[in-house]
Image (cartoon, rainbow, N blue to C red; front, side):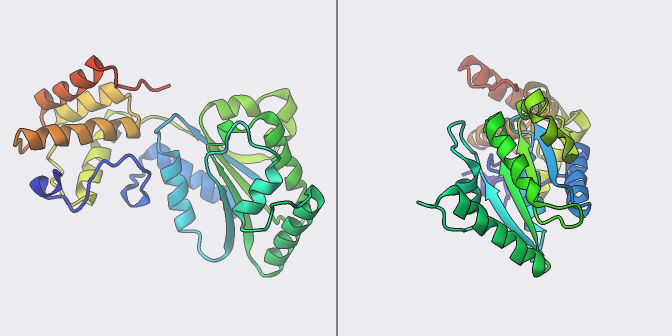
Length: 274
């Protein structure tokens, strides 16, 4: 719609996680470093948390895209609170048969996968995104499954990614053993104003547009209303580009961004960060 008008190759502020637009602000750089550290140190568990829209999944996808062939990865996305036992879901994540199989068979075939990959020099990585939806029982199942690892041979690593309430669940006394196995963890904080400026200009540059398209005032207003949450920043900036296109505005200034924010607030569409 507005891409040609502003000279973009593609939309700079899409809401879907896109690793090519990843801006490693200090919070995201630290999260990435912690993930890389966990893998290099053979940590049984790594925990990454952040508010809704903070960029957790984008960081995770960037990591997975650069792992190479030395890892066998099983990814569980958006588990629901009604998840049954974990083994069928884990089997499905690794492409193993699971329908109609009893728990003993599921456990044995997963163990066989771990042993075979270890013998072939590959590491097996289980990733659970939006893991805050798992209750204590399901998280404990993951902890028990990690017992397959021995002191000398780590054959399974697990990354848990989720919203802050995941930390609250893991802090419970029922999950003390799981907490003790989390060797690396990090919470992704919101961007500050200067990081927001760099973030907006980074995405404009990546999309082929002018980095000066948004004025400092417009970016500050987007920061104030989003509280530094990248997904909300994207929402305000994308809407501002639509308004700017409609008005033939060559620059997104403070007046236009105020209108975007006002319209969203008036219609109760401005989501407040949790």
